Image (cartoon, rainbow, N blue to C red; front, side, top):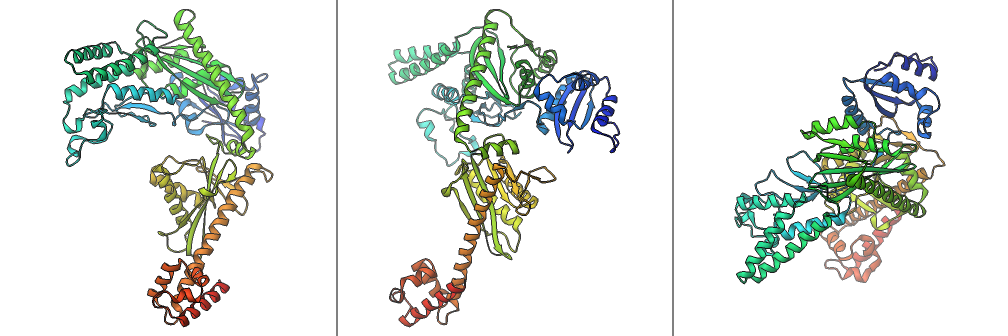
Length: 618
């Protein structure tokens, strides 16, 4: 909601008019700049008090000061409670990604270990998509080594199936290699009953939850029994499995919280960067840790960063423990406790421990967040020395989630729809990567339809990306405007591929078009980022025009061969098959041409003369 604002009023008068209408109720407020872009989204127990505080006295930190300078308009949405306001705030921040809100880096790339409980014979595998599909998810794992170790032990001890086959689908199919190696129990072929498989699955879940005592006891008993029955190969396998489980179990016993389940969260801040660490305790044992990096935190204390992280990330779908311990007191602890309890379907406590083992773990989480943050900042400083400023400028200007080290650009070339081709330039770290360039003969488009040509070229390239054949770029540039950008987005949507960032660069005004933005915007002509985009675009254009010229020339000469009296399609094909192209045939000379079946010395002389004449006119 917003008050009626007169266009003739000054910025100060507009703001004062907005402030005068703010209700004394809970809700969410949105701050916009002169162009209507959302700068900041916040929630408040009392909207009137919270929003007016921004304009009283000196700002609390440099980021707030910069925000207030840019505010040209205010909006608010009233909610029935502070809890509803917090949920709405989180949704709006995720939707709009305002410039002055704490920016949580995208965690979709972090893998989970998924156990498909809703299948007849469940599987355990790695996935990067968290869905509410009845499966059990463990993670996300920010440490790839920890995930590999977990998988290795799982497959060594519990031979769950990894394929997508179901028993009715296996007719005519033989057992897989994993079965013959002992890494799969073969449920698809009836080599294990459903009851036995479900029993193994229960042990898998116990293992992943850190409850390994019963598993160790069972393996010990199996090993002893196999030894007594002189089945030494089975006994050795049980021994190795037991050693693997004990190794994991010993690593988990560093800290013991008397059998409880808990998460310990703490944060650290350094300028624009922050890190949150989550220590995961299950069954009283420390199973591992996760961490998340955050940006745009200038002037924010660790408690505010932790508060923002819980609202925007931790409240997502996950298996909540009974208690969450915090390294810092946060503003919305009671609200989050209510929300977590509601989502978990039971009471979840949010506590700030002051002494004992829990406080020691909280301090350890805080120390880990500080060390991780220092490491990330150091790596970034080292990377800055190796990365052109243009790439950093592109990342900041386009608000890219990752540094665009690999950039590709698409362009098309044709003459009124004839000889249509597309080409793609490829730059790594701001420099041309020639072996990454691609050329496309347009096959599915008729007439002069640049949009359809872009659609075809982008679709064909990213089909290979989706298949894992080539690396996905961090930025895709389209030579053109809004229409070409839309065609590229449509092609990616048809592949059902998570689209990398796209931008279209129009030649005439050098304006940039972004997905979802109705109007283009222009970079400074002196901008290094713009110069890099122009270089990439011009290189794609050069490559496309050159390829178009070659295709046109070959097609023209091929048709010219068929125009020579006595040279029909059959002899043209024979010449092309022998020499590769009319130009190569001309270079071979009359004697070599005359060796081709059906070509006399006189005809060879006529062919060479005709080809050279066509080349001169092409």
